[in-house]
Every structure is written in structure tokens, then in C-alpha cells.
Length: 277
Image (cartoon, rainbow, N blue to C red; front, side):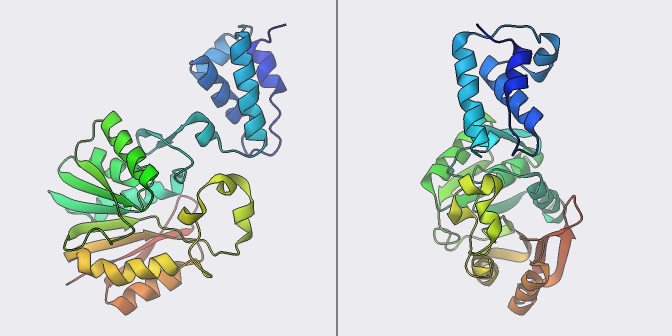
């Protein structure tokens, strides 16, 4: 017997999820090709046998912990709908704070802006959408991520963003930017959170950075001045307990106006400074 929409949702047990009802609805909408309003308007609708089987398979994968964003192949970020894959981190709302600060600290006119470790291209593309006169460059060490980011740019018709394969600044020698941003790996190698939730399925290379989580941030702070125009800003996302350490690194390297900004939950999330040159 084919199950109704309401019955399928009622059977979707996702006890380990933070948002079980929403997860189930998003997965069913994905299978049906409908919006969430359809589920409420047509609870007695009868999906096909194939749709029921697909939905139940997705629920089983979600029950095993696989992130909804990977199951759907997409995630909303800023004002954009981005395609995502297991080759990249899942864009998170906290990182929108980095976009807000980039818009605030960046030049008001034309500018060259760099997003290091771009992943799906979320930061670069959000800035490109808001500032058509900015030229965005996104770099990543993972070729699958670069291809995904470029595909997102083309699908969103954001012609002022390009993406290249580079481990941090390795392929950017001689280039300078008015603003550099990054959401780099910043989790310590022995952090127990690596065994919990969505991060179990995300690429470890995009999460872990040495014994204290600061190895990549140290490198970025050290090398960024060689790629910043005088007066340019470096903005770095980091863990909520790392603000003082990151600001200390920035000051020691010679950055000025060093500051930290909190995320939506009030946790220290982004630190940055201005390079006087």
C-alpha cells in the first residue's frame, strides 16, 4: 500500500536530529519536487512507490548522521542557494558574519578581494552578489571544491568571481588584494566534537589544524601582508575560544586596528586587522 504524505512524515523517526520535523520535510520536498506548503495543503497525497522508496532511503542515511545538506546537494547561505558536496564544508549561518564584516571593511568602490579556502564558494559568491564592482578570487587546495565553486558562480551568473586551485597563497605569488577573508580549519586534532554531528561527514582537512587548531591561522597571518594592499584588511573566522590567541598573532605580525567581532549567538567569531604597509 502506498503511504500518504502525512504517513511518510509521521514514520520518519530522526531522534538524533536537532530538527527532525524540518529534516524530514526538506527531504520529502526534495523527493517530490514540491515546496513545504504542499505538505500542509495535500497531506493525503499519495507519492509514487519509487518516491516512497527514495524518501525512506534518504531518511535511513539521515538517521545514520549524514547531513541534510549533503543529502539534498544544496544549502542556503546569505541570499544564495548553493550546491554543496562532501568535498566541502557545509556553509553555516555563523560565517555570514564574516561576509557582513567584509562588506563593512572593504573598499566602497572597485576592489580585488580574496577568499582563501573557499570550499563551495559561499563567502566569495555572497560578496560578489552584494558588490558587483568587486572582483572576487576564491582559492582552495581541493580540486573538487574549486570545480563546485566555479559551477555555483556560473549557475548564479556571478561573473565577478573566479576560482583557482591553490594551497593558501602558493599560486598567488605577486598578487595583492584590498581585502582577504578566510574561514580556515581551526579545530584541534583531539577535539571531541569531531566525533559528533555533521562534522563526522565533512572533510577533515577543512576542519583540523594542528594540536591547538591554529596552525593554518598562523600561516595566514604570517603571509597575508605580502598579498595585501596598504590599508587592506585580513578577516579570519575562528573558534569561540581562540579570539585572544588570533588577535595576539595579528598584533605580533604588525597589523593595526586589531579587533574581534561576535556572531549571532554573541560568541567571539571573527578577528581581523588592517595592514598599513
